[in-house]
Image (cartoon, rainbow, N blue to C red; front, side, top):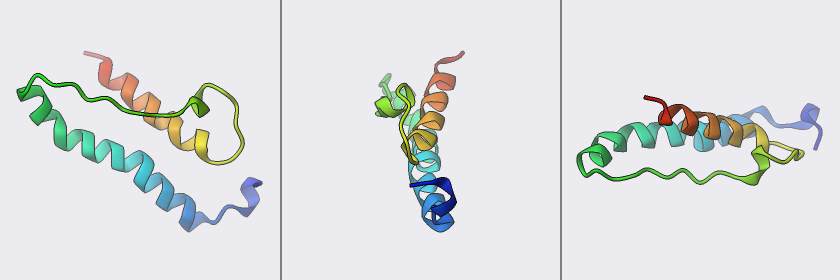
Length: 73
């Protein structure tokens, strides 16, 4: 579907869940996981490495960037 026809409310809702939701949950659990010496694993999509139409890539790329940034000291 061309970008022109995306419903902005739907797109915002998808980003709120798939991008901001992951960040909020990660921030909430990092102290607990650090105390338990645990690991947080994020599951993303091949859509960030392979060109794909639609919103999948635009939502998963921030997920991947956030995960990469967490690996930095």
